[in-house]
Every structure is written in structure tokens, then in C-alpha cells.
Length: 340
Image 1 (cartoon, rainbow, N blue to C red):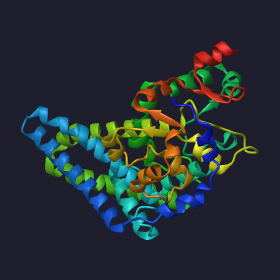
Image 2 (cartoon, helix red, strand yellow):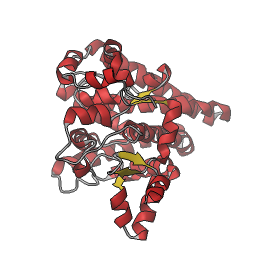
Image 3 (cartoon, rainbow, N blue to C red):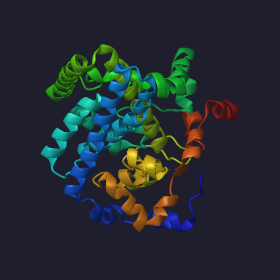
Image 4 (cartoon, one colour):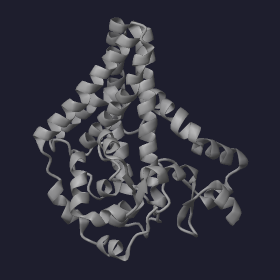
């Protein structure tokens, strides 16, 4: 991973909130086009995959892979809607977000509330727990009984984190407003309305293509897209150069810039992921539409050197599991044991 140059450190102290304000305004015509060129190919690939199954052309199920990519992109548009940045109209963004949440199996209003908490506290050791991947400090891990340590190690295992985890989260956990059950009526309405819409659309699709085609086509798309989404969220905050701080030391701009990565992906993956890899800029100003994040990097190239993680380098992030408060870095279980 790249070291941060002195020039980049100096530039990191810019008044980024003022600088990024000029990128907040979306092009609503482009937003509509981005929505169309995502939804139409997704629906087409879904239909072709189900037709391939129906006519016994199993090779055609390879179309599930790009369909999952488009579902990831649908979630990223929903994500922009949650920040009110896609059309910059709260009502329009919310209803598009709620509609897309039916496709991503994500109750929009519940997710939006949890995600807002994540943005307000990312990198704050004293405010972990809502909208984050659970991360313990070395001291917290050592103080746990063996059952707790085992559970945490299982939770952080790649097969659970990126395999079983997405299945549990998107298919089961999000059917109820977990963590928000005392948050009033809105979380319940969001969850139950989304569930009802999912059931209705699933029933219609099953009526048209059959239960077998629906399960063979849609479940893999959801699971693959969910795994990719969890992976992206993981790398965006669980990387070697990330920074965490106690509440008394935590500062928003510094946490956004240095606690979030710049996941430097190939252009085609940037497109499918809605440029969410430019995550440090997104955390600096969540109102910047996804399709304008690359403009920021173009105009301020010093941001490319802060928290940069390449696709190959990101594979090493899987081993990181604990925050070492003494060394102020994420470490693996092995590194924590050796330090002890």
C-alpha cells in the first residue's frame, strides 16, 4: 500500500467541505440516464437467465454474474438516494430508494437511518455498533471469555463474513428492523412494506417463470451481489492505513479522509460499484453524486495517494481483525498474539 507523501499530508488539511461543495449539484438528466442504464440491463439479464433455465440452456446462467453486478449498482444508486444526492430532491430520492430497496431486499428507511449513524461516527472507537462491521480492540478481545473470542473469530472468518453473512443479512435479518425495534413506527413500516412488496413481486415472477427458475436465477444474484457489497464495505474501512480514535480525539474531516480507503479499482468495476471505492471523498461529502466522485480525483490528484488500496492489495485486508490501540493500527489475530 502506498505511503502518504508530505505533500498529501499537507493537502489533507485543506478545507475539504468547502472545496467539495461545488461537486454536490447532480445533473438530474444524467441521474435519470444512470438509473435507466442500470435497471433495464438488470431486468434483461434476469429475463434471459430465466429463459435459459426454462429451455435447458444451462450455459446461459452465466448471465447471473453480470446481473449480480447490476444489482450491486442498483444498491449504489439506492445508497445515493439515501444521502439525498442522486436527484437532490428528498421526496424523489426517498421514493426511488424505497423502490430499489425492494430489489436489493433492503428496507430503505431502516438502512438510511443506520447508514447516517455510520457516517456520523465512522472511526470513532466510542461509538461503534450501528451500521458498521463489528471490530474489537486487542484489549477487548483478550478480556472476553473463550466462547466470546471463538464467536468473534468465526464472525471475522472470510467464509462467514463474505459467504454466510450476506445470506443472513439480506435474506433474513433485514426482514425485521433489527436494532431499531424501539425506534418508533417508521422502522416497522419500512421493513413490513418492503417485505410485502418483495413477496408480491416474487409471487408475480414465480407465476410467470416458475418457482425453480426464480430460485435458480434470483437467489444466486442476490447472494453474489450481497457478498460483493459486504466486501466493498469491508475494504472501505478495514485496511492497513485506516485510523480510529477515542471520542475525545475524533474529528470528522480527519476520520473521513484517513479512516476510509480509496479503493483503486479498474474502470469497469468502478462503474458497476458506482465509484464507491472513492470512499474517503464520499465520507468527506456524502452529497456528492456517485458519478461526480471521479471528477474530484481528477481535480485534486493528491487524494489518490491517501488511503489507496489496489485490488490485489485489498486481498491482504482479510486478515485484519483487531484494533491495536498501542500501535494505532489494525492487526491480525496472529499479530495480536505475537505482541502479547
